[in-house]
Image 1: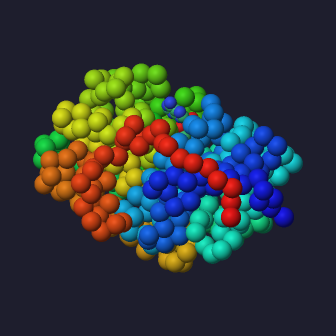
Image 2: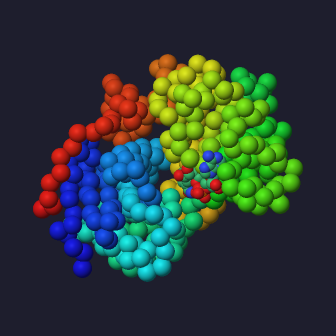
Image 3: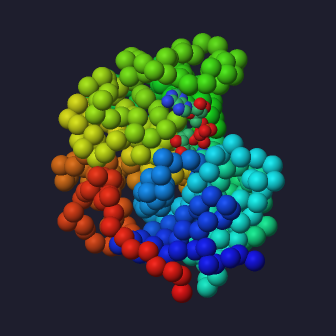
Length: 378
Ligand code: NAD
């Protein structure tokens, strides 16, 4: 039984529902349902430590809103949500199992009156973890399909599209990836799969990771790859920079050093804030919005796990949607004199709510700190 006396509901303007529960002694989980206009919310569960609970709340709100936008731009019949479990992600054994079981009950409780939020694996949670969660809720995806290789495919399709689209401006009309210098930052699940596609397309590989063992592993497959110091990646002389490690990689501190022609990767929230997008554009750097480039993973869940399409159909649909949405973003930006990161928000708001927003702002600074109230659950 899930002890609902431990749940608090937070009323947050623009979010449909946000719940907080203590799911184990000292372990808090927050589930945020941002918007279900297009369908029930889908968004993974992160397990991580934060400096304080307010930081965790900010993270889950930002990520859940990002899922609304990503699912809409991917043309999926899904809304946006996300969950976090605030604890040491290295917790293991019986303790981990208990936390995951209680989290599963919490998800089931949020869906007690009908489907509104589906969870999945995310940062520091694994498919085996999700099988434990699944014992207590049916509201879960991503336990059959591994989304990471599909995310990698989407990033690759985005890079190919951007190189082709801007070939005249940036590459003397040379449209293929053959011989282009591409730096992949983060050699994890997505980065490693992506290298295979880039290698196959003839790109010159540059690699960077804070974990030397990951660099070594990649070098056994691609001995010709050039290693870039993870503390000094900004000065690498490459054509395309592919962030697949963490967010806010392009910020006020390193903006002046950025010389790449294209930035296109899987990491969420690659720009510190939306004004960075404008500054990049002023320098002639093409930024492919993160939530278009990394949509492949969530698309794979919808197409393979929910709609039961074949892998071939899935690959074709991801490629088609990415081309369409990047094209729409670039055109919207040129027509309205917007940076690409603002243009995609502009376009996607129209997709979700069907009207043009006059306020195009989308930075965390403009939305946070939030004012909200808490109340006991019904
Ligand atoms: P992962 O944890 O498997 O890999 C991340 C890699 O980045 C690790 O090898 C880590 O050592 C490295 N890293 C961390 N900090 C670094 C730094 N400062 N410099 C260089 N390397 C660093 O993660 P993943 O699943 O491959 O995802 C990569 C990124 O894409 C993450 O930001 C994730 O949130 C995002 N993303 C992933 C998916 C997916 O399907 N896996 C979907 C959407 C978005």
